[in-house]
Image: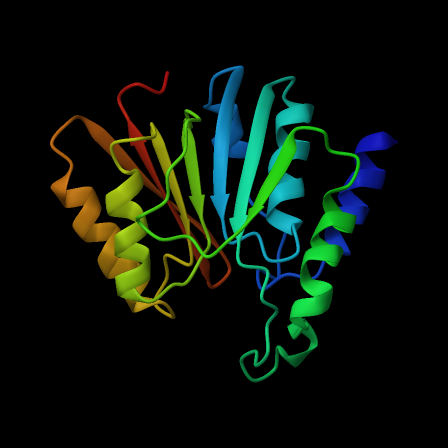
Length: 196
């Protein structure tokens, strides 16, 4: 009953990803404990999905999110319902993640000048999907985490695909790439040999 209630709550969070997030198969392959950093949570659908999948798997993971929370002033055609003002953005995110004590956030625009004393095992990147921003983030995190999860690895986001492919091909240690596709949307997962 609890799982169905949370599943329904997650479905009602507005998101640019129109389907259920396919994180279950990723979570199953991760250790029992860890820290995930998410860049670009928008209103928290992906964030809460990660938290819910970790809970269902009996795993203790902390999720830290970074977003400028500046609102979405002009969405793509057909997605105007996802537009939101800067004034209401953070409040709606906090409302959607309330009750999850393993979720934290920072309000800032992520750049490669970012400094943290925390150790992260997984990056979930769903920030800006042009080549330059995606490549900057992946170059920064590739040797700091054991797993990179990148949203929008699909033909509609050629910059993301180019950045992911370049970073993957530059990694000198043993690694594996998984491509998760749900209808026309794609997610890239780059695993290092350190993941069991």
